[in-house]
Each structure stands twice: as C-alpha cells, then as structure tokens.
Image (cartoon, rainbow, N blue to C red; front, top):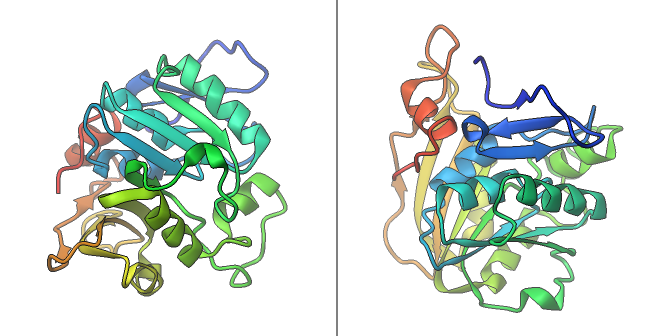
Length: 256
C-alpha cells in the first residue's frame, strides 16, 4: 500500500470512504475538495492521552485526528469543535463508521464565540491543526473547504492558542501540528500562557529540512524547552520510514 488514505471498494453513502490506521478509522470526506492527509494522524499520535481523560480537538473538520485518538486510546473521550455544519455531519458519520461514536462528540461552533456546551477549564488536553497560512499572505483557494483548512480567517493563530488556554484545566496539555516556518508565530502565541515546550520536527526524508512541526506545551509549564530528534517520514527511496509506519499503520503513539 503506497499511502494511508486509500479508497475502500464499497461505498455506502454519496461520498468516497477513505481509511486511516490500516482501516481502523474510516472517513467520508468531501469528494473533490479538502481531504485529510497524514498531519492529523501524527497530531493524534503525539497527544499522550489516557483512558478517562477529556480531549478537545479544535477545528476537527471531518474528524480525522479525533477519531485516530479515540481508536488508539480506548476510554478517552474526545470532543471535536467545528464551525462548518457540513463538516460536523461528516465527522459524526465518521465516528459511527469507526465505531467510536459513544466516545466522540462533535459540537458545531466558532472558537471566537465558543458554544456554552464546551464550558471552560474542562479538558485535560487540547489538540489542533490550525490553518497553516496567514490571512493575506497567500491566495485563497476557490474551494471553500480548502480555504478554511489552509488560510486563517477571522481567527488567527493567537486566537486559537488563547482559546486552548481557556478550555484547558490547570497544567493541561496543548498539542499542535503546523508549518515549521511558522515557529516564530507559534512561540509568540504561546508566550505567557504555555511552557515546558517539546518540539518534534517531521523530516520529509533524510537530509531534507523539516516542513512540519509537532509541538507539545503545558499550560503554565516552567520546564526548559526541548527540541527532539524528531521523526523522518520517508526513506531515501520515497517510501514511509519504519518509524512512520508504526504511527500511520500500527497506531503506535509518538513517544517524546
């Protein structure tokens, strides 16, 4: 198998069914629009949740990260916040299709005006895959799904981090996947709210600079920051590395 988002041969709804984690997570996604890749799988893998914890997935989209976490950690409860009503519908379908609907709740709402159902200071962990590009820094894709996923709208990166701070319990943990070239913006947004940073570069292949970065931070943390050895996603021939295979296929956590 050359990738980890592979169409299943039978389709029961009007959109293709893809799957992650070797078929354990099944996804309906917009046909021809934005489609989740491997970033949310790595995000879920570095989110070190345990049974009995509550995790908020901000901007859950069709639910890829939330479902990967729920499948990997039996007993964890995940809430996905998503602004788009159609994306919420996809995520709820996908939770049922992946047999985790009893532990994955999808809430429609805007992080700039959080729905009361979320409450405050109630989550052990928050994970997020914010839009990678600043508003105005890139042309907006004509597809509205891709535009929302790739380019910041009314909520900038700082708004996403402030929202996470509001939602987390004291000493709660935030995990982010983002572009490596936005590290300055990420650190600026975290300053004064989060510390004990752990940075995990995702190297595309040996000898190639990182394009993606995973970051783990603790609310109110004071420990020195750590830059880990990271993970090399592909080998020199272009296939997935053994370390990436263990995360993408075998649902192993990404231990830091």
